[in-house]
Length: 344
Ligand SMILES: [Zn+2]
Image (cartoon, rainbow, N blue to C red; front, side, top):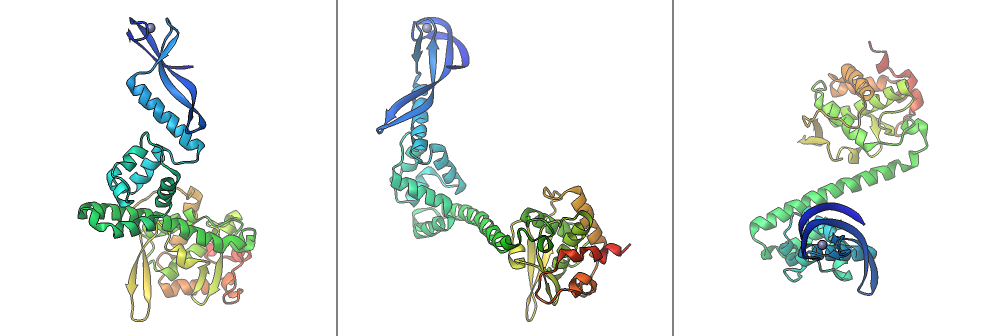
């Protein structure tokens, strides 16, 4: 028995005014033929050595018992149901309506009524699959006022967007999986996408990198990783680069530039699309060390004002590029000869 607090009041047990303890106790009961253990809160009269529940405690203890049952049965708890609903910023009644359930169903599930297995499965699916949420919202669009529909739609899109980044990262990591023990491919470090995002943001925010288009960005990433390997025997981001006619290009570069946190604008030319990377005015880079930033500053100082042609030429002068066959992986062993590092 754990005492939570002590209150002087009229004790409804012995009908005398005295200090009454509020205590927390392990309790158990059989609910739906399952033995459930849970923590209950009671008043305790030490004169009569008796426990007592106020109306509020009865309700709270009932909820604690039902939640313990839900956990034992691997069902969502009331709080988890509420969290799923809040993720989509939808009201209890509207979520019930969206799912075609009785109007008060969700309200009851978020308190004392334990959901059945079928409804539990549907709530989990809603949680895991924002695309499905959007699809049924579209189907039932007429059930909601326009304002509510738009609010739920936007919230679900945001959830969807968050998931998109998760899948994008998985697909990039899958493409890098085979290099995980190949030091000369990844510079002795497994790819770190948080760092990749921060490095690109650092370049875009620096104000000292002119016209940061994709080809230039790819070279700046390469210089950062190779300079880091030369100085510290470890690359900065763990990217693996192949030699293409325009220079070094990391594996999965198309996916990398779409990671959350990286912004670019698309510029349409007659025959192709250009990607110009833009800063986010946020000067915080939680995944970069001071040493990382120092190395990036060196790269910026040397190449920041390069035009695209200049940086491509700069890359073509590097021994690492010259010694690598087209479409092959550029080995980090060439970092020792890095030309950029010789520039005063
Ligand atoms: Zn008493």
